[in-house]
Image (cartoon, rainbow, N blue to C red; front, side):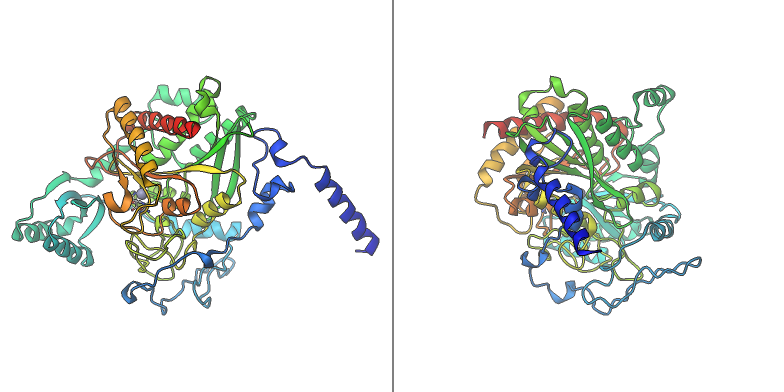
Length: 514
Ligand code: 0X9
Ligand code: ZN
């Protein structure tokens, strides 16, 4: 370009920037302020795409040698016959998959190759509840787990729920009986439960769906397209208060969609809520979308406590895992990014955040369900959440992450048996929320620090959010307490979501009081 041409472009650019209104004066719902845009408005999406977060200053813990990922692990090469595209090569120092940016075409191929497998069949598998107070039992269970006979579902300091594979049932029960360990069989035939969990809608419900402009109901667990279609519908229908933005893409190229509900008052506080970090916890996206529906459809009737908050919702943090649980393996937990071994893939996104990443309760073994990834924020999904929160000009006062199951309201820290200095504030508000949940719906929630109530687990999103200065950071483990576990029948969706909404309103009130 000629020098004068450059000058003209520069002049136009300067005029555009100078004459743009400041972000906090923009139409409510139209633009989301980022940290930079308050002084110098730019395209918010350009900023998000080009922003980088330096994870190197996040504290990490030295890993025990047995937990370190085998450096010799081979990287995977995914090639296709038609176009011979090599998607992955193996020579990056830390993470052989890091440099890969899948194209739309390569994505399609990858999605197909990873997801067009047969459905995993859990016929004959059972779920047992076993007390874990004695160390003898814990080491026995560790042994059975390493022999791949059981896999943990849930639990706390005193008991554990175990999935027992059909071929291991006799063996495991003999071993437990030998040690006089009592156990309850909670689910006798897991596949039967899975088959009954999410029946198709009846004719009336389908008719209703057709009339309402989106396909979302709270009578069924929905696929990602229904959830995203619902979010887009609300943004189109209520443009004054609702807006949707894609804050990044999952490994397989799916959108990470955030919906904001805000009347644009500059004095509003901000709250970030996510769901679906763990793929199989279907009640979580169902509950978060229920909140969205309630606030968007009835905003004018909502209390000032609710209207004085800018709400940001990301209902499905792990869309690849979520879709995989619908299509292939109902009990998948992690994301779907290859981890550098031929046999295993996926990272536990709730072990991949950058506060004390790599510490207790996480694993360096890519085959583990609590695999932490190759470094903090190695995964596009957790990175997108952290970039979004860090780059937003919104001052988040609360971060809520919905999981299941167990009925716990947990505050930091999760990485170790410790609590933050202001834990009493979190405990008081947590207990008020729990009380309201019980009053409205009858479910009893246990409130406490997650390391204290459950077990230490590092790299959680709640710890990271708290470490960024977001005061009220909670993990909420929704219903139930183990009768159905992850396979919660659809008849639970509305009651669980309603009582959770009542709890959320208490949080809104507390934030407004503060
Ligand atoms: O282990 C987890 O990631 C959470 N439980 S779940 O059954 N949904 O997997 C609890 C996370 C609590 N928070 C932290 N440990 N930071
Ligand atoms: Zn979870």
